[in-house]
Length: 179
Image (cartoon, rainbow, N blue to C red):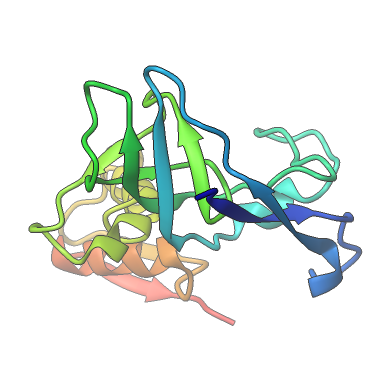
């Protein structure tokens, strides 16, 4: 039986606020995986602020999503099929293969998740990219230490919220700005 992939592609560049019209739902039959490949089934997908910038056609630190391409984003997945000796069916992994129900990977872009360490959804926030950005930004780049005052300009967002919590844990005075 054929597996049908449903994917959200960028249909148009937003002008102002992003709307439903900026996306198109497409369906396609999932091709067979080749040797070394794994078939991933999406369980959760991320929605992060950087994605808005990727929808524009401006020079930036990352290439823009092209019209007709799957919307960029990290996905938390379960391996459904594997022809890769490094990955087994049933493993939970993350990848940056975008907003789609199924994706095929060669294994090079996967990060294993240990479901016994925390709820798997945390791999997309506090134990994923936003949490890593907060942790390394505050502790390695800013070198915040006990007694420092830390001002977080985006304290309501995923990274800012985590920076604020890490700062408090480290004994910093945290001032959060949100709005």
